[in-house]
Image (cartoon, rainbow, N blue to C red; front, side, top):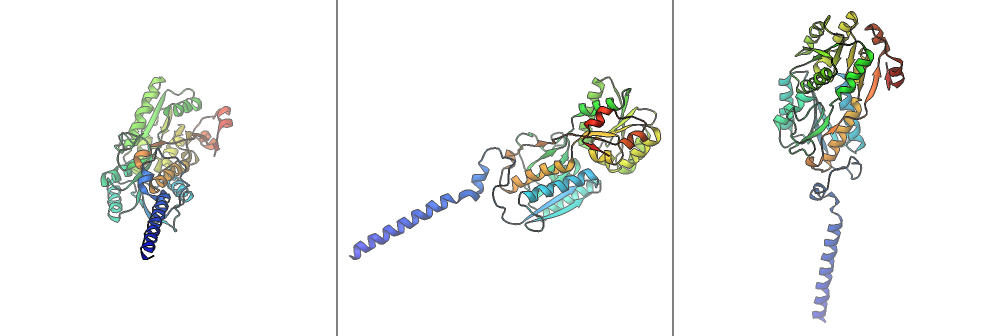
Length: 347
């Protein structure tokens, strides 16, 4: 009987161990290895409960409405994905005030603090954090050309710790818009900061497209916001319209450009909808809050365990036409009726 009892006991132990192995195999949903071995990530990251607490460093090159809206959209999308500020996420918001030394200092601060992820808003701040760390996940936003900026080599399959959302604008529709508003345009002034890689890349595309349309271009550059007024004034009498795309320096001092354009009856066509609200005649662009939401979804994927190499660089979506009738009048042009009827936003 004692021998039989021992056999039964051993069998019981073996059965219990088998059950534990079975249960462990069925609870592997949170295993990071399993998550990382999946295929390309879906933008639907709502599945899976968020556990733990996270610190996210946010570095922004300057304060202006488009970039501010990017951060707002990022935080909103993160909350929708379960990363709620004050509950399981803390944001360390830093602004470089347009100075690259400040951007580098902020990057080093984030590395020293050991943040869980960095959101870098605009090209200069993104370049600073990429130089500072090869291990902390980086999600960039408001970057025009991430390859030219040295952030990624292969946008379709990022090879390091960096991915994000580009705000590259299609320049041909922008130029077509200028042509519709200023039918007799022959020369366009391009106002930008030659020290910003994103601006240089976009201006080169704009110049090539303009020349293909038979248009001449005149460039004026400003290395800081304090130089924007003088740069805009240098275009007076030389151009039929001024184009300002997504240059951080110029947009941060847009009121100076608006003043020059109003005083000299030069139409100003912008590259973001908020600049139209601030006094440009029109823009065919996208909403930067939506742009930030795209970046927020990318960050949520990373924090939930998806490999960055599985998350291709994304591009801004949903172009909108914005017009400002009062600005058009002040700058001496008439917005065609067909554009008025097509406008998504009117200021």
